[in-house]
Image 1 (tube, one colour):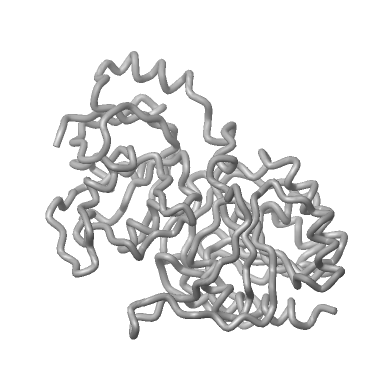
Image 2 (cartoon, one colour):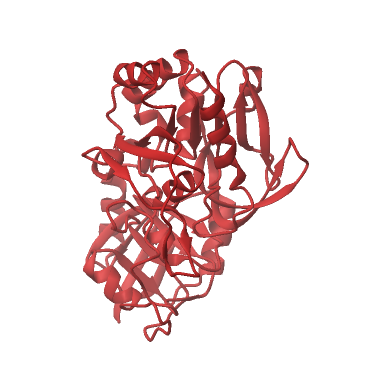
Length: 378
């Protein structure tokens, strides 16, 4: 363990111990309330550019394994993690290496011995903050200069480096603990899954309901998709989660608008949900500190059920979108929109993560709803 420093844009400084990669990195600092699933969080591409403050104080206990990876590339994408206590000695029959070894291998910073409760309260009061972590520079004036000269997360296009470069057919289904292997899907319909930073467990859930996913780059051509839909080669389109500010994707928003006009059945999750709103002409806005965790209550307005959900986003759609869409789900923490069903198009979208990786699976019924929409659209 090496000495490290955490410096925030508000001038706060924290001494820490580094257990990950060496060096100096800048990121947007957010907090995550999940009690489990640090590997899924690290490998969720939506965390690109961010430092994750874990509210769970003990991290590293179960090590890292080959199963709990979310990205299609099998790589982690968070810029770094900030924790209270790091457990170097792990204990889990699936584990292949320690969290520290994993971070070093993938050049990700990890620091511990930080008062994460105080940090979380700071972020709740002030909103997400840009920060810099270093185990080589300890001059706060120099750290402040580096931080000021670094681009903000909303100015960076992370998706170009994350999205699939080649088209691929996804062939796995949900993980079966009885066999300790991924299930073999029974495909009934085919869809296009546009990869903005897609998670494997979203694809697993789509496969499980019978949708064969052809995963394509975020630089997709709407006209060719529309042609294939009209020829009945595909039955719908899925717009994935992903990192950063959705407004950066100007060309993609225009292409999505074409898909909307063609009345193609669509499901959007997280970033995909936001892009659908933007394509309909409704501007996203940034929440103070966002929703990041596996225990957020969401009200299903259609059934009056309360679903405990997995969340990871800092942008949201405005209430005014109810002019063109029915609000199907609402966040019970702050009343923000969590789900939409568009009135004049076969389109549904979710702001939270119904695949629940990590987290509870109470919201996963949306995948069956999407399958029914694809199957019933002529």
